[in-house]
Image 1 (cartoon, rainbow, N blue to C red):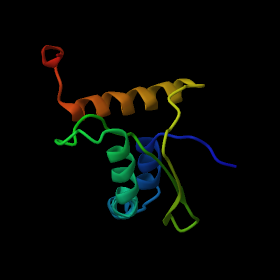
Image 2: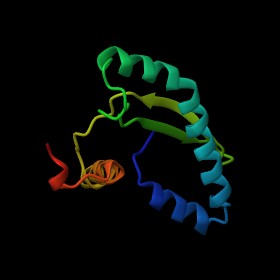
Image 3: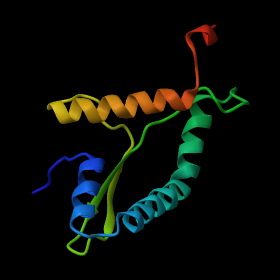
Amino acid sequence: MAHKRSMSGILEYLDGQGYDIDELWTQICDIVIKTLCCIQPSIFHTYRSCQPDDIANAMCFEVLGFDILLDENIRPWLLEVNHSPSFSADSPLDTTLKRGVIYEALLLLDKKPSDRF
């Protein structure tokens, strides 16, 4: 049975159990980077199909959800990538996690209200 937990909570727990969380994080980042490299052509094609006149390639962005499973040896495995992850929340943890994702995505845009046109 799967349970949704915060990444910080999982890493804190595993660190307390003596696992090398820096190595685990490196492995998870490696999975994400390799997956992005594999799906980039598809994302690029979809974007160009929808926004053919966007020369600067900066009209929109996409949030992807990566589901990672840790096996009994704490080895990460990619389960799936959610192309359109849900932002509805059905628990306080869900609300906290998803608000954080939206907040971080908006920070990446580096936009201010004065930038509106």
